[in-house]
Length: 206
Image 1: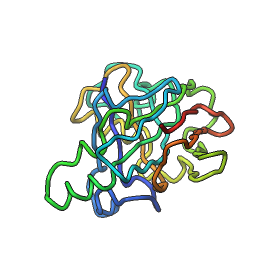
Image 2: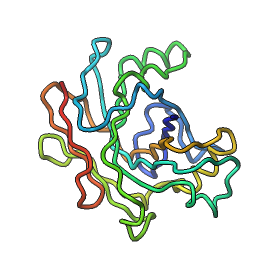
Image 3: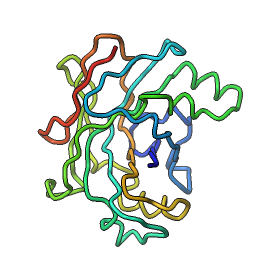
Image 4: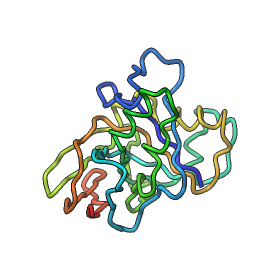
């Protein structure tokens, strides 16, 4: 299983990871997380001991449902079957050090537990893929909200682009990007993620 993540994919989002404006790029900002980063089933997220600045952002996550390579955008809808909401964790202090040294920064984004996903819902449950509202609550208060209508590259375009370089396989996940960065997380916080009025994600920070 592969976990793809897209950065800088909202018109007014958090582009600090790359410090690059998407609008000046010819391709999306893509990074990957290992399968050990996946956290699901409401299990708690444990703050790692190597960082003092763990931040999070909520995103719509797409589940790939069939094998695909060099997919045309007009056929991309055939290659995913479900959506959920996910949380992308970042070790911001580690990220800054790695970027300053000009080194790869995967460990700041792909450590164990850094890709949290909720329960998946069939795409048929949503009337319009281009207009799905989503959000994150921390301790019962909204801290982040967005809509797929503001994606710079839509889901089908992302799948088509990724499939030029990677063979997509059943069970692969695509984090489509976040509209903003939430502040640091702390032990004891309760995080809940929503697609529309569906609470699909519910876990604690330990």
